[in-house]
Length: 289
Image (cartoon, rainbow, N blue to C red; front, side):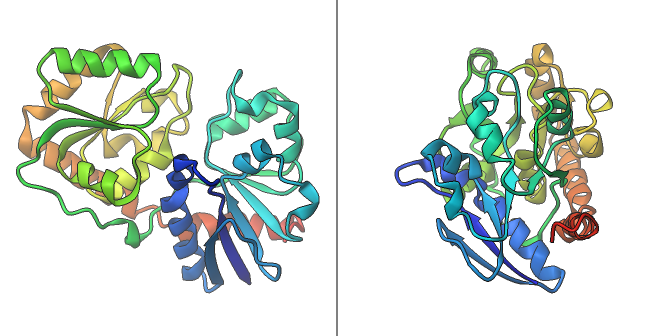
């Protein structure tokens, strides 16, 4: 089959770059399955099955539904939760226009509770070798790196780390090679929830593990279906115990390296092609493709 990965990147909107790595991953996974795959920003391919990243931007921009290509799959990589963009009726209706791939079991449960329309498929985040490209800086220049939007609960946690003497680097709206350079020079990388009930951030974590990062994640993988498959690949902590967890791992250089190696081994056992093959087979059974 012919596939086309379309990355929606609104002009002047830096956060459109947040999905570049996932676009690469799906391209590689489909190619490994023997499909012909192309990639472009803000452009469709009429003769291909278009996999659209950032479709929520189209919804917000009022993109005419009748201008969608004949064959399109939306790939949702955003958490669904009450009070967010997703609760708007026009956005819910938009995502009912085409099959949707979604990364999160928590999102699936949310859609079921709220009786969302449409045809959705849960597609776990996998690994592609092209992601493994960050060369670690020795010695690192930062104790802790966090990148992402700065909600109040994140700011409080990061301020607490700094107040106790940790060298913290915070990034927002920084992607690609500039972000990777900070990853390379950081001992730990944090995964903190944007809000308390947010789904596990597998999209963020997968890229970190692919680059042998020692990651500290908020949550309990034994109580979270999305996080459970990632349990052995990172250090876990509650929000209230974040400082002590970071201090412990910063004090243990060899154990921190062992954690990074475990994460890398874990992500390698999750080839992207496996998950794409599964969802494509399911869609064929459903007569969607």
